[in-house]
Image 1 (cartoon, rainbow, N blue to C red):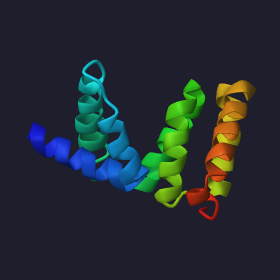
Image 2 (cartoon, rainbow, N blue to C red):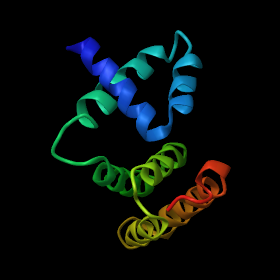
Image 3 (cartoon, one colour):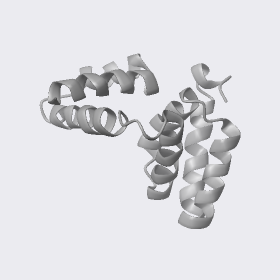
Length: 129
């Protein structure tokens, strides 16, 4: 099953964040962080994202809220891209981050808006959402 989760995770991550970005993360892994990459593929992307009871759009919304609240800008940018790919609109992202402003604070929301603007400016996402 572990190999199945790895393959499923690889497929889902490529579909959500883009095959090129997904493969670059694997290709750029060193002996030091390769175990982390493998764990993320199997459990984050295979086991959790592969579960049937939430669709990808909903999972993206949950991730945006959690990552924004925790102040994790690098992961947030990855998941803003994924959210746009999964059909979350810019307007919905705006509302998520406004909600975060109230429950997690102005600095967390400010950082989230900044990361989203950077993603929106990327050529492949300029017309999405």
